Amino acid sequence: MSIDLMIHSANQVLTLAGDAPKRGATQGDLAITYSGDGAVAISGEKIVAVGDTLDLLALAGTHTRKIDARGKIVLPGFVDAHTHAVFAGDRANEFEMRLRGATYLDIQKAGGGIMSTVRATRAASLDDLIAQAHARLDTLLAHGTTTAEVKTGYGLDTATELKMLNAIAALAAEHAIDLVPTFLGAHVVPEEFRGQEEEYVRVVVEEMLPCVRNWRLEIGKPSPQSPVSNFQLPTSNLQLLISNLYCDVFCDDGAFTLAQTRRILTRAKELGFGLRVHADEFANLGAAALAAELGAASADHLMVTRRDEMRALARAGVVAVLLPGTTFGLGKTNFADGRAFVEAGVPVALGSDLNPGTSWCESMPFVLALASRYEKLTTAEAIVAATINAAYSLGIAERVGSLAPGKIADVLIADVPDYRHLAYRFGTNPIETVIKRGRVVAGA
Ligand SMILES: [Zn+2]
Image 1 (tube, rainbow, N blue to C red):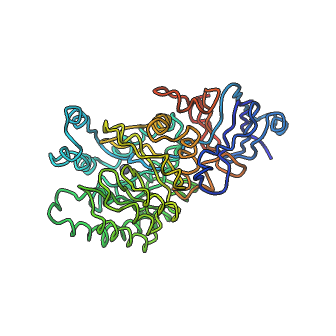
Image 2: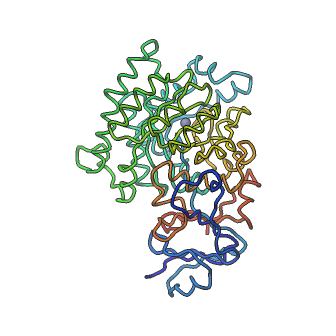
Image 3: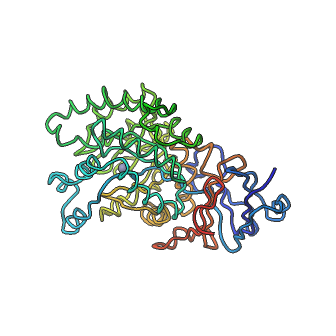
């Protein structure tokens, strides 16, 4: 076997190895091996060996590119379990309103909030949407994110929701980052349906969900009629896009009720979607318990979740996706209680919640810094949450999220002597080199 790339002599290699989501006592299991002389060997886009430097260098050939990681650490690429990375425009004006005391709901009632991004996204061309998101994905990648979930939800009509899905597919094809799409037609009730909320839910259930399912089937067979016929998806990215399509609902005050959320997610499940839910961000409407009942892949935000609901998530194997960037972005202090989720035995994952309203955060290292301080996760627990557990929440843990032979070679080199520095330092980028599918895409 020919080794194309060899990282060697690392202070620590965090393999994150294991064959199940890490929870409870194993939430902080980094599976560090080969301390002091760690090496990773890569052939093509796959990892072929993780071991100590002397053993692995013996496999190197004359053409093998070698990267010396002396004094540094090596870890899997970050998996961002929750983003709204595709959107048009910005909401800097609302940020200023919040600084002067306006609340999220005040801003929404004044016509701002999610609807202002919906108007900008509806007005943007597909190419413009792709270009704006492409620049953000470059920043994510430079900060170590090699796989990201991306939600729709700034269209809120069938045509614009499909435009967002096409933007995600185009970005998956042209950008190094792998993307997992989530349909979030139930983000808020759009202004043209004000007073007719049940009618909008009917549109989501009866029109949008079947359309999105058909989009997923169509994208698998590009043709002149296909919405994505103007580019070729690499087979590997295509597999990710069509094998993992999720449906999410924002269940909260000012968004969707528990009954509406149940109706949408139940139909989505029947149509073959995996389920995620924005639960307990502002008000507890019972969405976490619903996620457990329906066997959702994840419940996200969870800032006001009760202990009995945490235990229900643990029993059902639902991954808790915590988003400390949002709490910080809103200037609030009621962070999700990560420690309580770990103690309840819920596998905890992290996401940036990258979005223009509450969390324009493109840095998973900054998310680690917040999660350790305010959500009471240890640094090791936060790293697990940002890699292998996030991959489990997206159904792609057999391919990414840890360093093991056969996995996709998504590998980071951080210029720190010890993993604890990833959360200990903040405000700068500790990620020096990013390797995506065996290719150096940033640094080195
Ligand atoms: Zn979100």
